[in-house]
Amino acid sequence: MKILVATDAWHPQVNGVVRTLGHTAREAPGLGAAVEFLTPNEFRTLPMPSYPEIRLALTGPGAVERKLDKIAPDAIHIATEGPIGLAMRRVCIRRGLPFTTSFHTLFPDYLAERLPLPERWTREVTWAWLRRFHGAGAAVMAATPTLATELSSRGFKNVMIWPRGVDANLFRPRERVGLDLPRPIFLTVGRLAVEKNVEAFLALDLPGTKLVVGDGPARAGLARQYPKAVFLGTKQGEALAEIYAAADAFVFPSRTDTFGLVLLEALASGVPVAAFPAAAPRDVIGEAPVGRLDENLQRACLEALECSRDECRAFALKMTWEESARIFLDHVAQANQVVRTRRGWLKRRRRVPKPGNDVVDDAVDNVANDVVLAEQKACAASLVTSTTR
Image 1 (cartoon, rainbow, N blue to C red):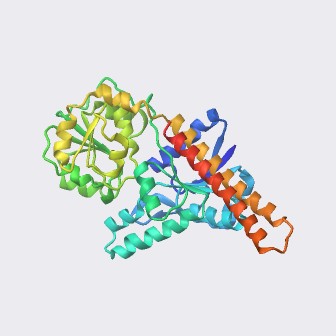
Image 2: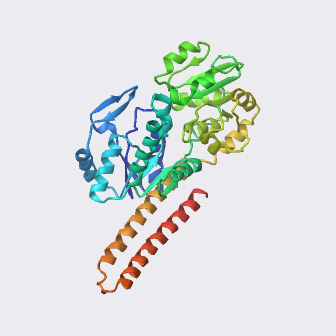
Image 3: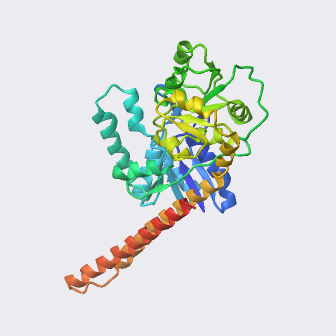
């Protein structure tokens, strides 16, 4: 099976969406599939206002349609709601092609943090638009049970859980590198922007060192306001893994992230987590003794130092990118099969001779609908089983 993923998030961006898609593509061949991408790198782009490192593709349905014809995929997945995602969605609807989507970002919460507008515009209207965008697909994938529940409660249909994984070979306990910083070292990793709530961490009264890895529009202001914190900028690969392993605790101050891959990267490195009891850390950590979730983030940071680093590592080893990719591929295949089944029945129903009897007509309609519903329920049951294995 060849899957085309249309995404507005791609290299050189450094975020969870890009890492998730990259790991999924690397694992796919071992699972009998191939994943290809349609990204901003294939089009002219403009910098996104306030996020210049994010490039928005200057494209429309025509250019996307030509790329689609060239790749000729067996299935289509739309990963983002940007220009590429919008254009691919329009092409799929016009051609009658089934597609799946994934929900990565709580845009209503982000907009509420950044824009001085009434809640109706930052939340209600945004949720309505997102519901319409994803509603045209065969299914929408969410990273956690909490996010899936929220989407369903807001009227999203056919929500499937697509959990994440971690590269436990890269992110692992190591000999601590010589950071030459006072201990304990409290580390945070991520984009430095207002919605990440990094200031809630930097403002804490903690011993040792606050270490920040990442970049973004808020970095300069945070560095000026908190000169005692150490800002290292963006790090990747081995350099990032070494920093994780050198930390004593990992602090995750975000309240709006839908998952937080950095949580798994820290745990795989043997580093306990301190966070608010927000959706992402609750879903990732739950009641496991690998961190502390507390509305008092200072207390969570200090208590996290008492957690077993061995237990942190063992916990993360249960979550692999291979399993994450397998679930993604299953979701894509099964969601597309539901659409094919529905369309096949509708075509066969149209070929049924008109008996001139309203009762018989109604019976044919009911049988067709019952079969489609049965297929959808069977698909949903298998998805629940696969994601809880």
